[in-house]
Length: 467
Image (cartoon, rainbow, N blue to C red; front, side, top):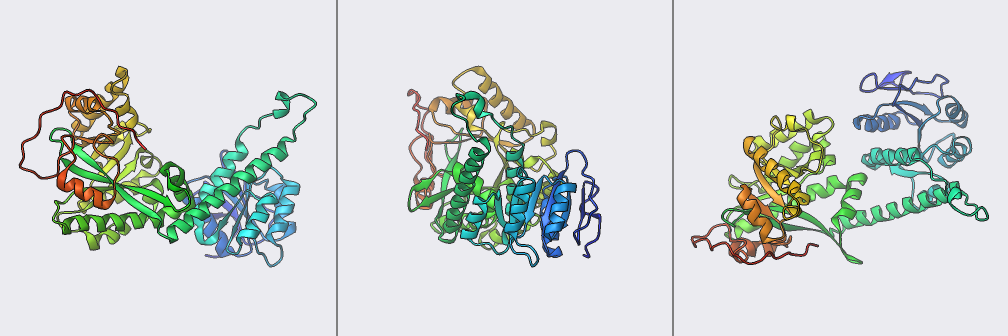
């Protein structure tokens, strides 16, 4: 597509001036960000703008490629964020950074380049760059831009006002040092994650879903674990957000699908009954245009008429442009895959829309399960979710079940499935095969057995420690 002035991307909310260092300035509407591209290759600029456009962020943009054009744009366009290539034929990226820091020191500056090594990246960060994104990994662009814009919009704290006058603090230097340290730490952790992906340091563990009425295993959730050779098992809450912000979640997500499908086939080869296995799908994965087709493509070689993977999404996935995402979920359901909303009750989903969504199951957030034995508010929420699911002909699973008292209350309320450390922590593929075959005491029976159900125990509640 030829670059022209006032080029429109995705409608009237996104406008831009491209092609040369031009004096014309697009008028940014209220709420729009002003994105300044320091880029000499029009095609690369288009890819960057297209990636920003996909986020739905309203913005105006302008492209420059010389020092004169940059200084003019900083004065006239007054960008809210600068995205710069590192290597330019007439003007190098570090020079652009120097000009920006001199003229607009508070404006976030991100390198978007195809040629920046680790040492040069660190040097750029030390000289004032906010972040760097490789052109080969543009999925990191939107999270990086969102992070620096949020940081620049945060109100400053006047530390000088809280300290003795004899101890003045250069707040700008302190904030820059803190930002640099956080950015370097983030990139170091991200690089470590990239190595973990290459070296296959990830594992899948499986936590059973147990029928509350019969106490038999009816399903299982596949949970990602990272076993770092240096520090051991890393908490998912620490590495999962970085997988998403870095774009690595797409590669790891595909590995999860293939690994879970292979494990299910392994259990079948052992003569065990088929078990519905759910995998977690992040909002980032779901937003990918070819998500549903890619899901089916990856799992089809391992699927059969009696087995398929199911998916679990969070309530956050229901926000934004849900029409396209709902089409993907409907396609999966047509293929026999069930869809569950994970951590239900903790988000902001619209109950009015729930009946129109392609959802088969609601998973009660563990916060409410944990509060069942406390005040009555948690019990009221759980009871309402169960009634809602029943009215919409959905099944309901309670997460985080850790005591027998909680399990008994869920049984009385009519909850269908229970998942938590009371039954079993997440275990390896081989350990779960043993649970499928033998169960684990009266609280979790194997999937198929002719033995009569043992009576409910009257023992006191036993709390099980969670990881």
